[in-house]
Length: 417
Image 1 (spheres, helix red, strand yellow):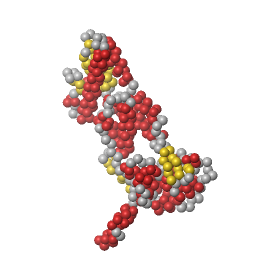
Image 2: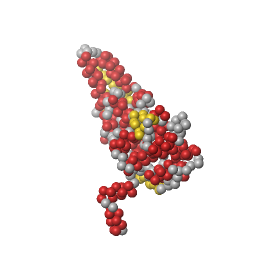
Image 3: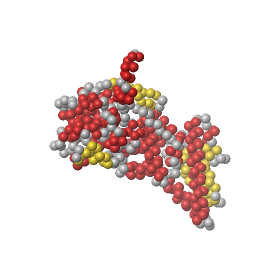
Image 4: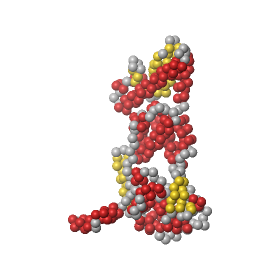
């Protein structure tokens, strides 16, 4: 039995031809469309493979090497099928082997995006609406990438080279910042791990590719700013409710999605028994006096807090914090490729519901709470995960240094000046 590959004579507008495979034994032959395409000029008929030496373009060289790896696996699969069939039936005719080959490769007709849709159906039952939205967004990005590159996306094409090209596509064509692009890569790897574990592909080259999250500024409220909000005299009922919800969030460290789902049945004996919306963890949060005082203001309401949409909450929070005079200058640095983007804001401009969780972690550590206790409340499984929300002010660091090394530290510093 022989396996041969050849490019179709007909080429499309981009100059590429479909790459076919024929399997022949004596006078019987079957033909298989590999689903791959190639510029015929780059094909070496003697080796039955693409020839990377025929181009100086490093990207195309990489694509051709990936194509050859695909063809190696494709050919090996055919011979493996023959070995299995004739191992079970030593006298099996070629037609029996051919039927099994076609049957096996017909399984691959279930396309990459068909399998991704199966993945989405399952994730719909497992993840939050926000995470599901991101997985759906990734699907659209992959389709755009496929369209731009004029190639059909397939598991066998998911190589380190693909990851590099897709990352560049997100940065250059979709105008994403590095951290946003890396998050999309992480979502893609989640899908590929699932596909690998469920037998849709044996390709595990995604493990080689590493993403890097660049540290970003952590915006949080200082203790004095939080107290200012808590005690702020507000006539506007809308902003008063926004203030109460946000401050309650700062005193409990929860995500806004959990605030939206809070019910009176969840609160017993000054403890909030919370099943988190994002991770489905069950967490017991002891409510301090500040949090309890806020709940008391809404005791006549059907829900513990007068929650609104996250979008409106973020909009009104900026208005509230401006009124409260939370207007220190903050600098935010982000990266797009190798380009550094530095922007200066007033603090109220960058406050959002996510600020509350960071505020809780940072102030709790400053007040001496053990990291393990904070993690039990926030639901972080490792200290490293919690560090993303951590910000300790310079004054607190100086205070801690003075406690450890003595108050003369400030005097020595002043003397030198």
